[in-house]
Length: 415
Image (cartoon, rainbow, N blue to C red; front, side, top):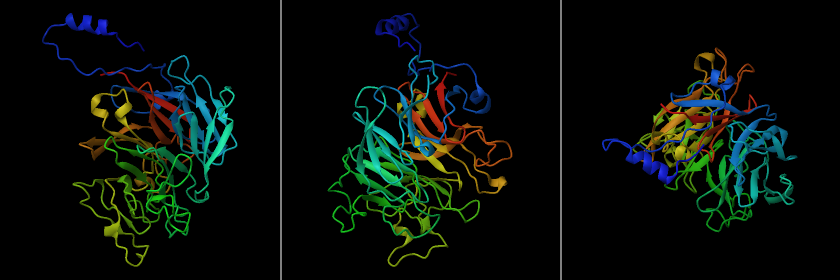
């Protein structure tokens, strides 16, 4: 895609009548020919979706773009990280290149300088290419102060605006009191794996407690920072209270050294929780409260949605080439339900959370059509289940799919 030069822009502008209204430039992405994704998946008018890569075996999960501009992806069950380059710029990955293998349930990945950090089931490693062959053969253990892979085994990592390494670790169970404080929590490390001196429990006698940043988060598969620097996480609620409880806590404003509810409490109701936190957490009837703890002490969600929606990867539209009205919003991959009644099946889709003045105010479907008619998202006949959402250097949206073994690319094509 060619960007107009300053002289071209100037010439075209002077040729137009003085009454012309100039609108912000929105880039149109390269679009391959129609394919199965474009036939199946519904996106809003003005957008188009295509398959970027397919035939990915081993559960395609979390993504990041490397210093080389290529897309990197974890294949969790295969123990691999693959690179999906588009060197000819045609909107399709040229090939699937395995750059690391033999990893223990690799999930979250992110670059810091020449190192690719990867969150595995029970450790954080960093990888780099030492001989220039494109494979990341040098492996360095950052920390193994991570709970063992049991129950929710995925681990996600991101570097915060403070330069620290944040790691989410889910619970070992559906609903229980954990004996390992690192479960159902977000942990915080220095990039070398040491404990930051300003962690809430940095000097605790129990070394497992030292990395704790926030807790009471049953399974925050992803998290991010807002432009204002606030940490937002999603949260997969527990099963066993029927189709509608507890509501899925889609956006939680994570606060350090605070409890965020699970397993004792959840945020009731659906939609935005303004202005703020007009709905406080309520007790889960299955769990007695520990001495001295009340649900009023738990941090309530900012935005909730239908139970069993299973929000996973989340990404702000700020770096997209989408129209301006999408740039402040949040896009979340819903994995969909496997254990509701069919009448209350939760769709596998990408949901747009509209953010105004820094607060989520409403949501709407952005991409859907992966679920087979009359089936659950967990049914084998489902065509795909979104996992992660990421915007690339080209401004397009990339969506990973751990059921169909694909990555999709969504571009804005115009009105």
